[in-house]
Length: 330
Image 1: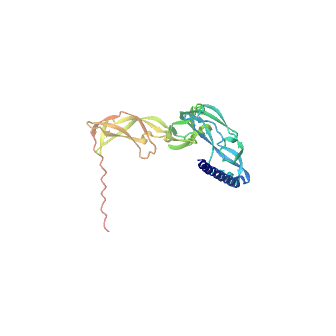
Image 2 (image 1 turned 135 degrees about the horizontal axis):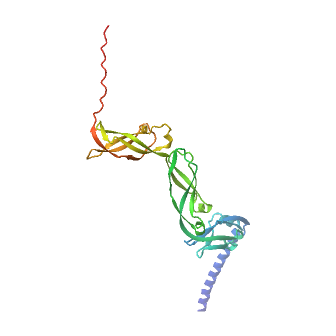
């Protein structure tokens, strides 16, 4: 029985010494390849990684996204640091609105065993945490200059006219509306569409970037309202000239200022004709601009708008050609 126990103990003792021997060999190899290397210093840049940020919070201040670290260690481990991706994590799972100072000491830098952290810059991180909100802002257009003489700006349409921004409550609460940069309308003679940048505070630019809106500038001719009396009505049906009652009307028009001259005959700008109204002898009066008129006329009213057919007049026949006397032969 004693002999069996001794043999069993001898087997255990042999296994234990074998494990110690292997460990010693590994330690010698590690010392040879690592501990025996020259120690070198190196400056490395490590990114800051924010983790577990609450969904209703946002960091409202600008902070340095990296830290500069000086490390010392065996050359192989130091060179290996440049191949691995690692960061200094900042856990904000328990964060609340306000200012938070994060200490960055040597021990908080994740480096390999055998590498020593000598210096960290900066040694702390200041974060301003704010409530994350959404707010709608109306866009206010800003204009400069005047359109060309004889024209007027009828309408200005912008799209979008409202922008929704998500950001820190302290930043968005200080802004009531957003303005465009100056829209220059100097000398415009026609309607145009332009892309206009917004004039944004740098804090808003940080949230939405440089932003533009679309502006539609609707121009029209500047007009003067004129009333022309005793305008003859020219009624033609199926090629026959018609006599109507009354045969003259009063027409009120909006005429562009740019064509009005001192001796202008307003009746030369248009003619008054009629169109038939089904079911009777009444005819509706309409204004037809002159063919060579290159500006629009806006009809304000015609008095009366309806005339009555009196009788049909025979169309004017063309003059018969004069008969030429036969030439005498010599």
